[in-house]
Image 1 (spheres, helix red, strand yellow):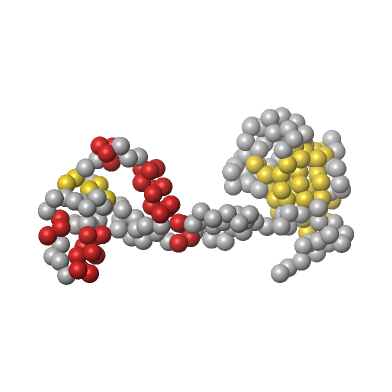
Image 2: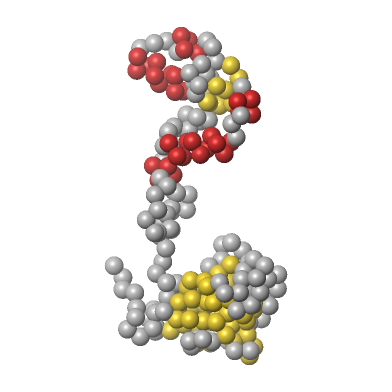
Length: 209
């Protein structure tokens, strides 16, 4: 049950018998907690016109303690700064954006004209949001790993490979094994066609820093 204390703090009565914020303040001031809790009453967030989104927004935006659990919000979650990198909010670890090695440019369907960044290693294509190249609208594309586009830094080469026996066409020919890609090759899966554009090639390479 969510409860609001006499000082306006929100907390969860299932995990805290008294307001953790008031308790902390009273300990600092040497005041008994009973002196500040007598006016507490259980109240619905809806009764005061607050949404859960408003509450969470206030928590993250102001870098304050969590009013529900009484615990502090980690600094990485409270930060909203954008420095042109993909920022981790502390849930999935380091998610800094990898250097681009090339692009797939969609030539058909609802995503026509959209480009998809490629990075070193395997770039999986599918409908799942967890894929590197996400194609939600084409139901003929497998949800997970329909195919992959690979950049191998050691050989400085790109390849395309079918995954799990899915049909993939390279320049309108059925792909029967992993094939090396050349600039402006056409890759077709489902009802979607891509043109491949390399960035890392020859002297134009990313160096480890």
